Image (cartoon, rainbow, N blue to C red; front, side):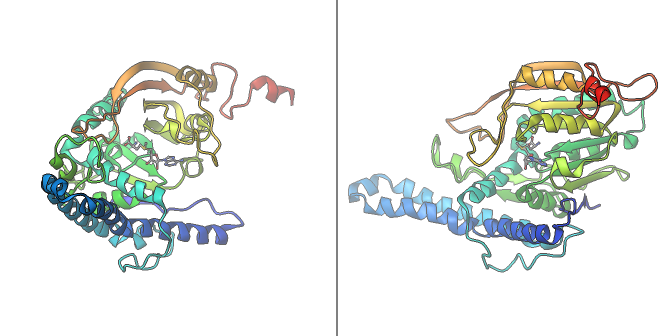
Length: 397
Ligand SMILES: C[S@@+](CC[C@H](N)C(=O)[O-])C[C@H]1O[C@@H](n2cnc3c(N)ncnc32)[C@H](O)[C@@H]1O
């Protein structure tokens, strides 16, 4: 059963022809970024090789193992490129309401490569480890399991019809959390706006069959902090489960597009599950407001992650960076009731466990409810209605 991938589209405006053109260009830019992976990555190794060859002969002799290692690195890049070719092979047709993009399999680069895009290609490869490999089990246990456990606690499968419980996972990455929720019988939609992620999740969810049938070398671009050469070249196999292994009636879909633009229907979802997502907003209040609006009265929002505000310190981007306690005030201000809150939840994100450098987040975890009025209308705690406007202000207008 294929995962339904809704069209990558923005709501159409009178400028839609312009927007279509822009989206096509963006699509081709990301395809080009994937195609540029191999030359870009090999260029990096060749620079080191060139320097190595310029060193005194007795230094080179002492570094002969290192020289062999660089050959291994080049082979790993070639192997990764084989996976990348598979990832972009069918993407021209992945979105249903967008006319197919031109061929993605020839070697033509339609866009000048952008360095930031190369980092995203590398991050996509690392995300395969977090979401779809045995090596990612520990990260998924700390990041996804608390969310899954809470869903099972709020909507026990033996006390409800799980297929009738609609769960949304915004910022779904490569889709593992959404997949795990759907695998338990709930109706689940993952939402993602990055084409890097969407191309790769489409490959895993719709094309990969058989367990651990593909391999990548996720840490091959990590030239520093390696204890042993093989830690850089290590192969990681994926997917660790068969992605088509879901109950027959499981409703699982991935919807492409900006969370704020795609989800405008009020009171549609029973549960919204966010993992490492809410700090991806320019204005986190807008994310919280949208979550509040799209939840049914009595619905649940489960969140886990840090506040690594993604737009902070980006010169061309707007950003606000309220602390966790300020965020909680905003959440309560919209009318949510906080049911659970935990801080210092040790979590990692796409980490190489063998590296001498480790990043760990003291994440926050919380569960909150949109209240239900006795008459069924959504209710606020602090006089803020579902539009985020104070009642007093509304009344006086
Ligand atoms: C830090 S990643 C987390 C991915 C996944 N939830 C996980 O825990 O591995 C955040 C994801 O949210 C996506 N994202 C950010 N802003 C978004 C938006 N406005 N709409 C949809 N997706 C968004 C990013 O592309 C990225 O894949």
